[in-house]
Image (cartoon, one colour):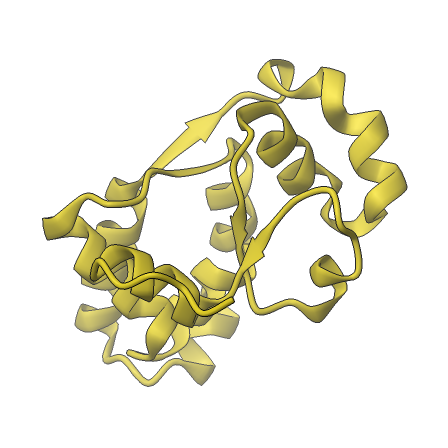
Length: 136
């Protein structure tokens, strides 16, 4: 979720990921279905700190929502136990990544402490979108 939160705060790498991918379609984005409920509860806080105007924020939020496929908890519930052992705070996101066999895009250092799910930084995700191999 932090990548979406970051994207809604400013036009940095996190926002560019969604904006660039809209046209290039290099990455499929998936998130637990509650993602937008969580963000909805934080909209007032986001509006205080965002570098977007209200109109820009609404457009950015719509762009991001259109890029993400929401997945029901039932679809990755069988991976939640394993994910909780890796990182209880971010277990739903890790469980979904385990289920789909995909990396997570995040700049959360806590997620990088586990080794089961690959974590891409926003810069690495942009390298994929723009067709450059991520640095190893």
